[in-house]
Image (cartoon, rainbow, N blue to C red; front, side, top):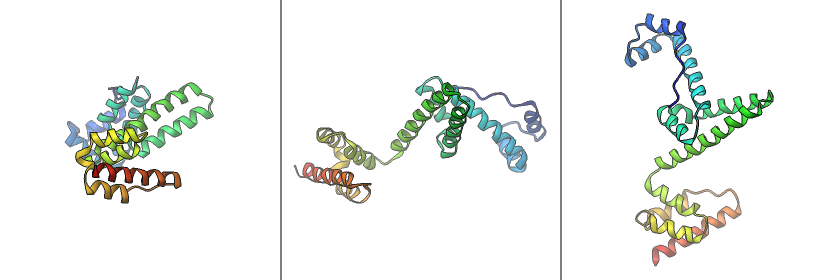
Length: 185
């Protein structure tokens, strides 16, 4: 994982003066002094931005997101987007593109982690609904039969999915009919 930059001397001295020796004393010091907390958070956030910008590939970005979940938050993503916009406004297209690629990968990682946190039933229904064609949907049904061969799966498909347009509504109706047929077979 990319390392955070060293603490600036002034911040290090303030932390030492506050008696910081370990995580517990760090949290106590930050709770006791709002100005120290702000300075520490600025250093930490800047370091995380630096670590993010210096990830070499998707695996390093995934590792960073495991160690620093903050990078998958909306605030962090918005901050990176502002940095991209600033780079574009300054004509720094190379850095803007590098950040954009990392941001796209980070958004995919965030979506993957959200998907992995979902209950197995939701994962199975989503895989079935999002299958690229009927054959892929049948394979998804076979792979997740334990979850999909239930009334709960049919109920989730009928009640928990919203369609943005008529094409999406038609797709959901077809998948609901297919799920019923597969369960009856």
